[in-house]
Length: 369
Image (cartoon, rainbow, N blue to C red; front, side, top):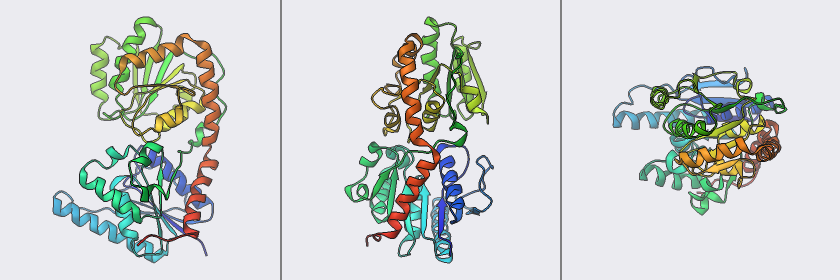
């Protein structure tokens, strides 16, 4: 009889957490599990899902009022609970915020083991006193909690931390390759949705300082989103139209960025920034903000595999970029160390770590009561 595992996330639109949960679902499917993927709404087909993964959409209306939102939350918990009972699921794995809270409630009193994964800085993912208290209390009743950094784990009480594990994100398969070894273009790149959290405005400001000393450099920001027009106006106001490109989303990112000289992450918050790990795998030197809750630092180390700068500091960011551009030995060292580290993020390795953690918790121990 096949083992059944249920994955649960709000949506499967563009994002690092969405990519990771799809890759895990596909992995467990190929390992012979019966796999269900539960979302609140239909996805856009951005991340390919194995044919054997069964999709369930909890598409509910009437959530505009407080009463409607409460009613929808109860109905979603009830539907997931019925699914767990009907399939006799061995494990429920959820990602992000309210979905984690609902998953613990859905699994209460059932034989299904519940695993929740915090994917961003907890103070942002659980924004508000009520949500924070609820998460800290309910997570004590989960069977396993997956964090991406020690900083995120420290946010929670000891009862949660003692049954948790830090697991990095797997590389996307298209980044499992040898790094580019040819001559690199005079290009600085970043990849990520254009919203306030990613803070591309900071990167543009820093680039305006870089280009004063290195006028041959060009900045390309891949990604679309709500801040696109704001950044476009900023580029115009700074007189950088010819030096900055905003091509939007692309499905060919590895080919687009492989020969860049520097990758920059300017985020205010991150869980485990996939884009940094992917730049590592491409052999691109990285500059990153040291953003809560330590995911970027966990990847970069103490400036061993990239250069960390304070959140919101355009001048320090520009200085770090210029260091890499002017110090070829530093750039080479960062490239080599980053690429070596990226090999520890091979999908097979990370997926096996998830499987080991889930199976171990399923085979041993029980949920506290």
